[in-house]
Image (tube, rainbow, N blue to C red; front, side):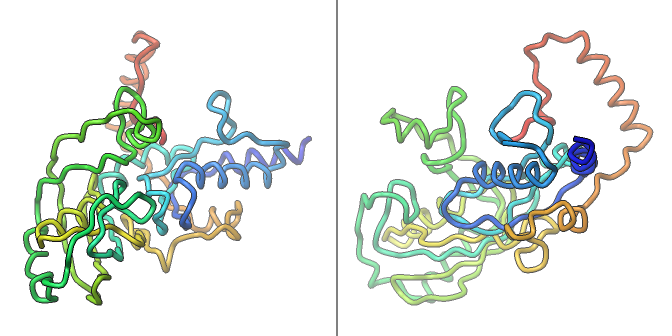
Length: 286
């Protein structure tokens, strides 16, 4: 028991952010639960339940959902590092997307049902590249219906799968820092995208194809970079989900300044007299 207690204390001493590799298939939440289960088992916790919310011995969260069909960089916060994740959500991300012209799906990716087919023979590489300029910089974008966004506390994608009607969220301002065509072999094309928070590559591919008088969906999507974490240099694959590897890869939490400490004390004082129904958004984890 002492060994277990010591191992768990060592695990709970980790505070910061790191990146893991998310493979295609599972949701981001599923991957996070798998990571949590592996770490708790290594710490000697018998039959760990990573989905348990209350009295969880390990505080962990991720900084930005990747679609089930997507792979790549998933930034993880552990311990006090979970409070750094809002910064990761808003920061720059890079993706490589492979799209297919001529077919649109309800999910805007390969997992959905084909809902429209259109010709793409008229689209040239020059016309494609020229159209990319309209989608660079600050643009308005309508998020896809099938997404992790919520309506009345439920994910829109879940509501749709239950057969409920869901209205599209209003268009919002998003930022595309760079957008380049890496390959054009109709019906397939490959894009490299660097964007800000709240951006959907699936919506970009759908909107881009419509602007070219056709339709398209994503066949493959990989997040290649988020913040300072890159796919090739920083992501830990499943065989490296260990205390040793994570402690070596961990970007520690910055030491709070005197001003931040005072703000934290004031916040704690306020929370102690506030209603129990209030939630500190900085501590919420997806």
